[in-house]
Length: 130
Image 1 (cartoon, one colour):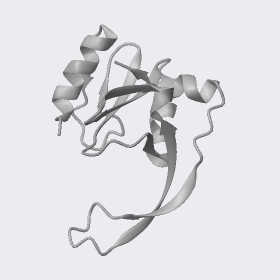
Image 2: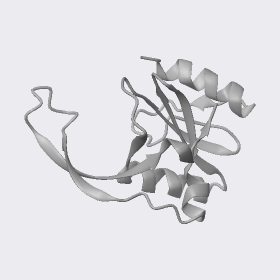
Image 3: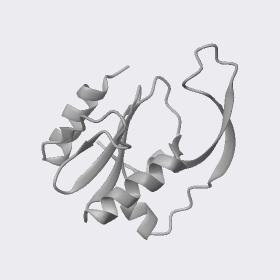
Image 4: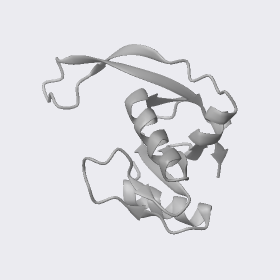
């Protein structure tokens, strides 16, 4: 699996910019530059439809809008790297198919505890694949 910093380097090159990683671990996004706020996900498995958490979606979109930037969701899978301009998708009225889903809690290492999370889906064909 690619590391987040490797993905950040690739993304910076592809976007022709220099993304800066956020230092605050409580920050909802992972990197930024003058034009973008960015969330990275490195996935072990490729799915044609990628999951996006509503909580992060809303927080990052708000951050982007407040600062006059665009929110990019950048994912690596074994099939490649995908960049989703979430701001553009929202403007175009993209249907994320939001639903509440029972997901394993990240904070519980036993894996028995589940949380209801609101999630949506983005088709990889809606990305600018590199």
